[in-house]
Figure 1 (cartoon, rainbow, N blue to C red):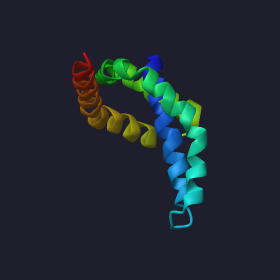
Figure 2: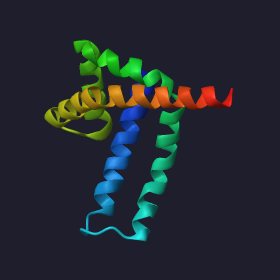
Figure 3: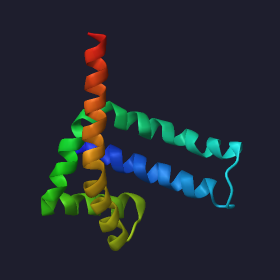
Figure 4: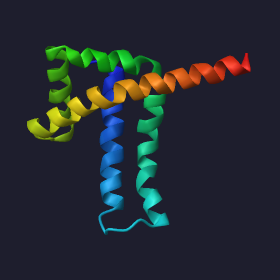
Length: 114
């Protein structure tokens, strides 16, 4: 499976788990920010491969690549198959356009600096 996609999945799972932990008591406090500190390396690793992500996400149209991603989620994070499929489908449907937009914004900002 594509390394950039692995990094993205790792970051999504880490931030999601931290979010649920922070909101477990039903309210948000400043101390909840501490729950996200461990996620910083995962997020930074995604930023390092951000230009590779749109293509990596497009690979999920291939049934074999999609199944690899589902299997990775199941094995790495002990997520059942149905939930893994939903997450991979969500990544494919939602993040492709968002990442393309982010990269366009980055390129536009770079052009202002030239």
